[in-house]
Length: 196
Image (cartoon, rainbow, N blue to C red; front, side, top):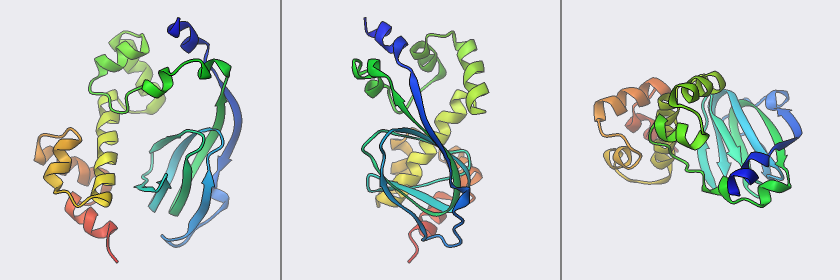
């Protein structure tokens, strides 16, 4: 029965927005606080020191990031970045199912993702890459790196502790990947973002 309900859930388009009409020149300028009224998918087109505060948690954003929001979340964009986002509602069948709330945030391997999607691993990987331009493993690594960035900002935990908590077990690989994505080592990034 739940599968039938999930298959009948479909998005209803509400609107499209492009932030390029508001040009910020300073990393502390704000787009203003707002409460999310519909579901949203926001794609970061470019970013220079931009970050988004969602429910009081600041998250630095990079080109290519994709953010998902639920109605009722408090959001404020700060800094220099350009994004596009769509708003949508879900039809009445979404309210009958709690499946959307049970989707895991971190996936560990492509087989698990394929099983959840109902496709073969091969077909799922092709479909996933055609949509995101990333393989499932590249996506997972980027997601974990996003979590590392959040924890570097919000906690005083040692970098090695953060690294293992988000799923990295090889410090060399972790360090190289972080520097390749963000241009800083994790320690340099923490010092830079928390500078007075």
